[in-house]
Image 1 (cartoon, one colour):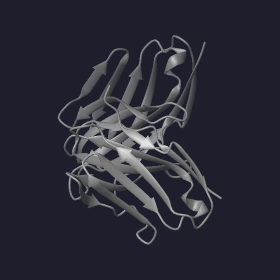
Image 2 (cartoon, one colour):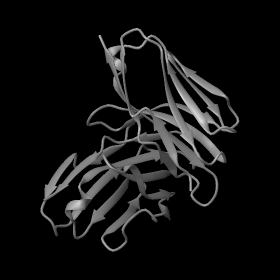
Image 3 (cartoon, chains in turn blue, cyan):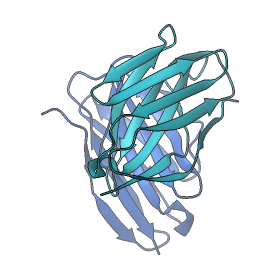
Length: 113
Length: 114
């Protein structure tokens, strides 16, 4: 049963701490997306990769967020330093090609105190 | 800039009723449109994907239609069941520099009462 796996599922941290979220896309998928979901803003795209190359990270606050794909089986989203306004659910999604069906992980719920 | 709107934000219906969820988008130059379901505390599950050249897609009790020229899509759910209770989101995929970037609506929260 192929699925996108995200860790951690829940993270509570204090303001100023570094947070790293990880995603294992579905094997064979070549596009990976990071989204953030909040009640106020809904789902917002932070960054996406095709064949491990970053294509668009315009939705990401560059001064504190960074996204990477060190290999085809791992995508990471890092926040340093974290702030209370970063509290949200962060989703990873993967797909084949630019415009096919997307498969989402179950999300990482981040709370920054 | 593409904007996606879903109305109503919440909907409550009795079990067995047929219902329609609406999605509208401002830029008709889309590549495809997807409908997703999200259960509380869970990720999104893709329900139906309609390519821009298609008018509708069906899966079981679900039927999604697309009218690009008017910037509208509907998701029809037949004979609703309590298990259909969830938030339904539509997302459009556009052409151009952000190809592959899905723009999401904020969803319609559906509650089906037994």
